[in-house]
Length: 371
Image (cartoon, rainbow, N blue to C red; front, side):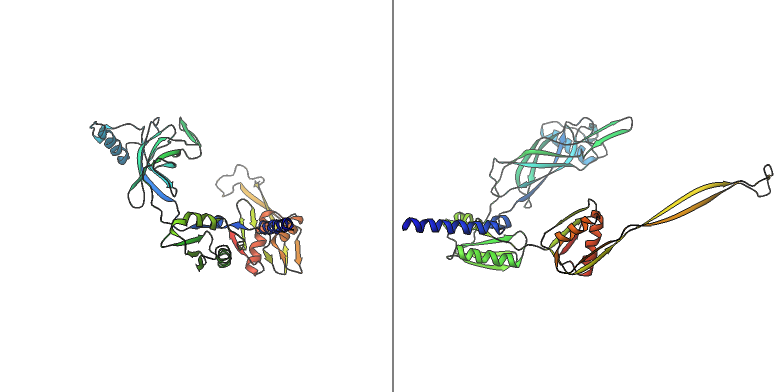
């Protein structure tokens, strides 16, 4: 009897898990983050050396002064006007310092020219300190650039691919200082939603209250949830358990169209009211031919104001495409509408025009984003 009850309990558990996954539930960690856990932007000014004559020209006094200061650190004293090399370029180095990065970790950096260098191909970034918003140095960047493009010039002919004035150094910066991350304050945590929504926030609160009755959970607004009552010695375990809780977030009614590429992306359950669509196109063709009009029997008489003229003859032709007609009696989804319009052999751009007209008429109950 006891074994039978155990099997029934396992069966109910499996059914509940199946319902959770089938309903489109996601983990809380996928739709929110812990307040205080964030990336930090780093930036620095550096010099790329080793360029084959494609660096900054002598018009960039900042580059010349930077090269002079660099050489001065090695005991070489030169005047700025004595530096004529174009094998160096001034650059801005940027990076993102991830949370909980420790000294000795490596991060990727991006390098971009700020002078008139033609290409950074083959260059090496000289040691560059990277600072945060507090003006403290958190990492040092150095290494060989990976460009992913090229630029070749010969006899005023240029062959270029991508942007050779921007580069990338994978694992090119060494973290020197840790960023202190405060997660809990007096036993309280805050969850920040990636996309603020009242319905999603309420579902998160109800799920957390059910899973953790010992905690005080409440939504401060549509984008932030407060969790109180977390023990100081159990913060990490509590966060790990909270992030594994699954909920079904509220879906956004949004249709995204790209006129350049003809792409339409939408949720299949976006609804459309009763509507009648009539779409037809008119093509206007203008064909102009020019003929020469030469007076008869007047050849050779010059000075009488008689001359050869060019007479244009224009022909207009109008062609009207077959009109597409669509009507729905009951509320339908945008997926069904697009399928119906496709069967009418309408192009993607025509469908985009129809969607824009539907939004203006009030029949499309979704946000229309045109890119």
